[in-house]
Amino acid sequence: MKLHPAALIAALVVAVAVVVSGLLIVTAEHQTGQLFAELEALKREEARLQIDWGRLQLEQSTWATHARIESLASERLELVVPDEDQVVIVATPDQ
Image 1 (cartoon, one colour):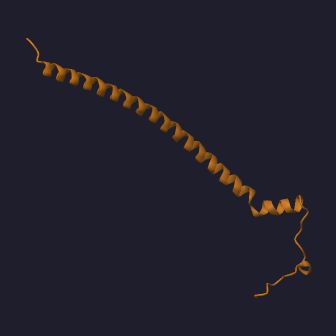
Image 2 (cartoon, one colour):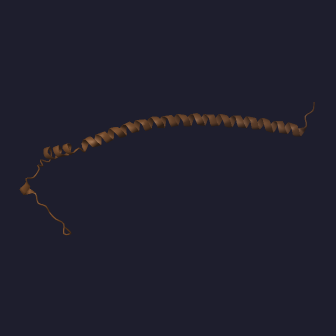
Image 3 (tube, one colour):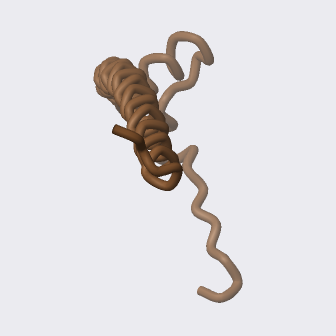
């Protein structure tokens, strides 16, 4: 059985196309695996950052309480609440 040159070329083109598409599929699967691993790592990082964010918000609210500021003002700066006769109210010109 003798193959026509056109049939042989067509078969060769189909074989090359199958090999190239197979290689492209393998490459795409490999990239998918890499991207999935990166996504999982980023999700873990996001969870860790969310925990840190919550801890920092709690810490900020603790540091900014009125009682803490008042305590620091009296202990470190030796500030005291003035008596009534020491308070001067200054009005702005437009009032």
